[in-house]
Figure 1 (cartoon, rainbow, N blue to C red):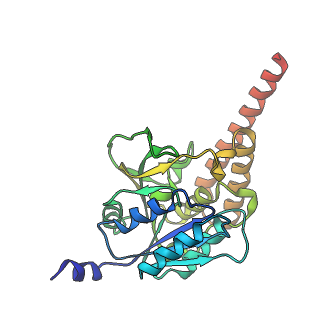
Figure 2 (cartoon, rainbow, N blue to C red):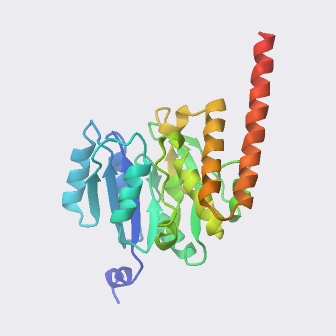
Length: 273
């Protein structure tokens, strides 16, 4: 049997990408998908009404690759949740993989994770960090794989969005919350709700992607008290829509404690000035 036929017998993976004004990096990101050793994929890119040359770049790729599909939102949604959900609704694969428009996948990323996904409900990996020029900021060492459930996310988010693969049939009841009040936290909000219902996840103990750290990214501007407040609101919403409360409640209590601690420290520093 030829390699092509072997690939055709493998499950289709739908890669979901939202983009807004991504002309600087999106070519490199798409090429990292095209270069995957696992070939049975479709790339669904939803442009959030970009005002630069992004759509021209996307249309060029779409004209050359049958498995790259491009859609445009009716209006800018001020966040990635809406375009991501559109992409999921357009997808045809058994599995969903998520990718930000400025990150880079390593060649065997999909092949490795789609082997793991046979045994787990969510698969993510470590990631190296690069800057806007593609220079390495931090490089992860290989460690043991770690089981991921809500308890693993109590203190901090260990899930990098561009490293995630999930089962589509399970994720359809989750989707990304389109509430603008949690912009910048919509990914971890979704994964917490997903793991509350489908707790069997794994963090692969080696980097399979490069995560680009940009000062202009949506989540980078959410810091300190504002980020804590958003986090509390996001967790409270998750509890309302999820039947499994214990894990999310623990996350919520930790977040509230952090908010109180931050507020006290802030007031003490103000008094000393």
